[in-house]
Length: 328
Ligand code: KG4
Ligand code: ZN
View 1 (cartoon, rainbow, N blue to C red):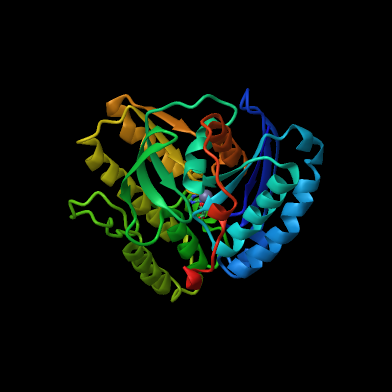
View 2 (view 1 turned 120 degrees about the horizontal axis):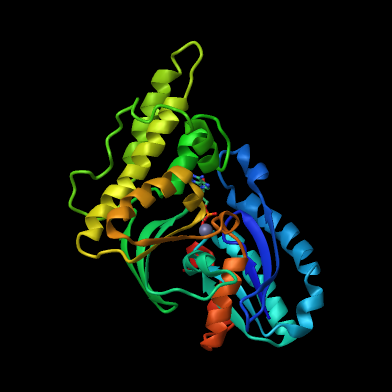
């Protein structure tokens, strides 16, 4: 079995995965959404402190599996340095105590593997990752052959939802709050410009849209009873249209066969429906992770861990050292 740990942002999670069957034997996640909500975003130092409290509590619950562990997998990059270090330190302690190897897992590969929890992998695929930290399209041939073909030049898709939600005083995380508010709103009421619509680049950008939305919010706030529903609906529409327009451009050169959407924001129902529409003419298969595994979790890290273990890819303890940025 593999023990896996995730602490790259604001979710503390631990899983146990059976190597031979990919079966998820245990998974527990403690989210910090409520604690960060008052600040309208993740406060790294607070997140680190909460991981330090939560991770040992979850680890206690899996002690019965310790004799059967073959390796420890842990998210080692990318993420917040102060929170990654919490998971990595725990992983090192378990690895040393049980004398088993450690596997440093890339969080983005983790999101790709959220598609394969308790399943066999299905490659090749074209994958759109939409999370709080990333917006990127990847061609995935295997665990070790992943090419990023498009990415955001500034804010990410999920981050733009978080920032717009903050401006509307909806708390954190913004994605689910905006999705709920947008439901039933007039998506065409505010004619925000689709980012990079005249650019030949296959890339993403959300900072301009965020500013246009900010101005619409300021205008609406002049009303006696401001109502942000149509702004939320129009924002969600344009943020999504930007993705589908760029994907359509990309598909002119690389026809999709199997297409996947992963990451926290892949839970967005409007995005899912628009991508489904986009794929229809190509008769491409759309694969999605279960809703519970879209956002950060340790099951996806464990699933990558299983494949890395089978391929003999391990890390040294030193490789996983996380230095403060000022020392790098
Ligand atoms: O993958 P994830 O849990 O963490 C990162 O790796 O960043 O993604 C979290 C992001 C947040 O920005 C959150 O607002 C966004 O995913 N998100 C959504 C939705 N649910 C979560 N964005 C849009 N619509 C949603 N329904
Ligand atoms: Zn993530």
